[in-house]
Length: 80
Image 1 (cartoon, rainbow, N blue to C red):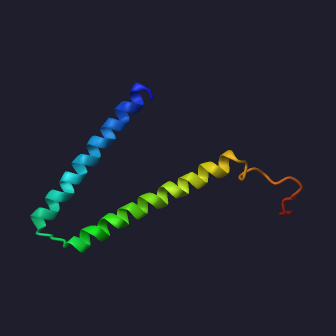
Image 2 (image 1 turned 90 degrees about the horizontal axis):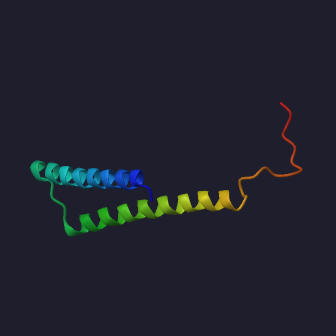
């Protein structure tokens, strides 16, 4: 990785941590409390979103690398 990429990743990680602390502080100030079941649901939802994102990106790159996105030979475009 280049130095610029590492710097960008570092800045993004710092921003993510700061956003997390900001959300935690906001919840604390507003008096929001969640039970254990709420935290489990919150974590499962985050993992589900992450798994869906990874899966869709994998399908995108897989189809692109294996030629699934290429034009089909012998298929005529409809006249307009």
